[in-house]
Amino acid sequence: MVALLVRLKLTLLRNSLRRSVWRTVGLILGMVYGLAVVAAVVVGLIALRFTTTALTADVTVVAFTTLSVGWLLMSLLVFGVDETVDPSKFALLPVRSKDLLPGLLAGGLVGVPGVATVLISAGLIITWARTPALLAAAVVAFPLGVITCLLLARASTSAFAAVLASRRFRDLAFVGIALLGVSLGLGGNLIGAFASSDAGLLRQSLANLALVAGWSPFGWAWMIPADVARGQWLYAGIHLLLAAALVVVLWRAWGYLLAARLTSPVETAGESRKVRASSWVERLYPATPAGGVAGRCLRYWRRDPRYLAGIAGFMIAPVIIIVTQLANPDGLPELAAFAPALVGWLVGISIAQDLSYDGSAVWLHVSSGLRGADDRAGRIWATMTVYLPVTVLLFLAAFITSGEWGLLAPVTGLTAGLMLTGLGVGSLVGALWQWPAPPPGANPFQTSNTGGLPAVLSFTVTSFGTLIVCAPTIGLVIWSFFTPWVGYLALPVGLVSGFVVLRIGITQGGRILDRRWPELLKAVSEKAG
Image (tube, one colour):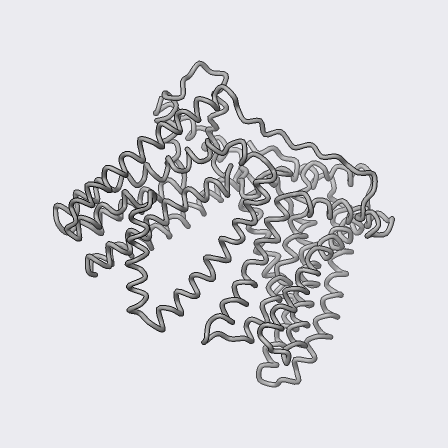
């Protein structure tokens, strides 16, 4: 059964690669990126061989405990990323859960995350290959740690399958991902400042953190070599027993939950919602074709988790910059003042991917004879309705907290120029380039066979295209650092050039759509096999 399930997963992967060149290229890029990460981590683990055993113990315990926690969090917050062999698909087959468990566990290693985890964990053996006792401890900890990671992910997703399938949880998960990103960014900056001010205190904090992590369930397996290195054989035995017991408990819990899922599969049908006859959305925009598009898109912004994830993702970097620069005694308040410009730079990406998010529903525009320019204008109205207030609030927060009011003109010009230019460039890119995105209400991190790499390339073209087109405003802002009065020219130049690019994006993007509506509908409606 193990070989059958692993072969099944490999067959599904091979078939998906045959159907899509983008999937093949995306897998290759993922493998290259994964190998780069693995190589960097393994080099770091090898470097630890030339440090003291105490430092090696603390670093490895904290690092590998974080790896275990990451498997748990990613399986919950990014549920559905890799469900190629979904257990519920076996519900109609005469197969028991205990027969599926080994194969599903082995199948979890098929993929970039699984292989990377095995290779990184194997690096623990290299690190501790100093004495026969340490080598034996690492050899025991290696499989226990890897199996714990896999079982944590499988058992947690099986336990919360019904909750994870609900839209409410997905909305909260995206907020959680945003908060996690902000926390990681703030934590990294504060650790850097902490290390430069008092290295000794940082070393003591690392030791305390390793002690707490080692006695948590996530660190039981990884703590075994560290205990042996310190000569604490009793603690090593205790951690070995705890790690083995955790694997047994997670295995049995997963088996029980899998058996329940085989007899009662989780229903993932869309949730019904009562549609009201009228709302404030209808009164917000004019009764024109562009206004109708804007109203529909604004409802998507309010209801579709994919858009919520986009807002959260765009807000992470500016918030991190503002907080870290002001919290750090050696920070730059001027950099915090320019943080809102990041949102302006990224807004155009929403327009570039908007048509892909519509999916087959875009047939309504085709069948109704909607002008492409009205489509472009309506989507821009909806996007500005969401991002303009957010940018203004971020703008006020940046200047009130930093006190750099002298930069008001260049920051305003740069933010407005990037936002207007980005919307224009995004309108053109979105009209030229579409792909099958995850369906409405689905996890935005779910990967399809064709949509992953085109989305990344669209992001890259739109973001760098915005910087290139907005170069005059950016140049004036840079010049103002040496000649302050030039900063006042950035505001009119940014507004004028931004509106020109926006107008071109609406008209030219609209003409492109008018010529290729059928091709667009086919592109966004392709089934992800």
